[in-house]
Image (cartoon, rainbow, N blue to C red):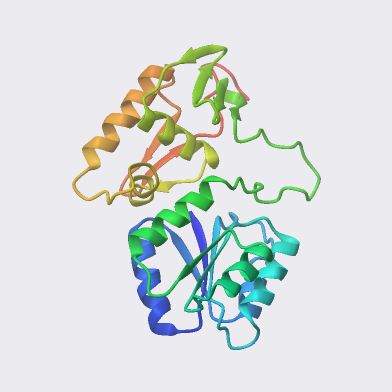
Length: 244
C-alpha cells in the first residue's frame, strides 16, 4: 500500500517512515505542501491509498493543502497534528479530511485508522481516464478467472458457483484482488489482514494461500514471489496449445 507522509519535522518523519515500512507500507515523504501536491499529480504509478497530513507546514497551511487535495482527488486524508482544539478538528473534517488524530498518539491507533480509511477507498487504476483502451474490470470481479467478489455480503463465486471462505481467506483474497498483478509483501498482508506483524507467522500465510487455491479450484490464481510476498495474477493462463 502506497502512503504519502506530509511532515516537515525530519525526526518525526524518519520515525514514522521506519514504523510504517515495517508494517508493509511504501512511504513517500513530502516536506512541504507544494511537494505533497506535486506527489499527488497522476503519473501512471500505483495511486496512494492514504495521505498523512501535518498541519504545520513551512510553505502553506495544512488546511489549505487538504482543501486542494480534496478538490482534485478522493484519496483519504488523515490529519496528524498537535492542534487538539475542537474547532481545528471540525474545520479539518469540513474541508474533507477523513480522520483527525492529535499528537502524541499511539502508533497502534494510527495504524488502525490508516487501515480503516483505506478500506473505504477504491482508487482508480493507474492510467484510468486517459482513454485509448477498455475500462478494466471493477474491484468486485476478475473476469479472466470467472471470479466475482461481493465485498458487502462477503461472498465469492467462481463461474457462478458460490465458494464458502473463512473470514481471513475472504480478507486475503479481497486484498490481493484490489490490485491484480501487484506484489503484496508479507509484512503488508499481515498488517492489513491479521493486524499483526508477520515474523514467525509465515506458515500461517502459506496455509491460507493454499486453502484459497484449493477452495477456488484455481491453483494458478495466486503467485508466490520468492523472498517478497504474493500477487494475484490478472489473467488466467491460456489453455495448452493456445498460441495467443
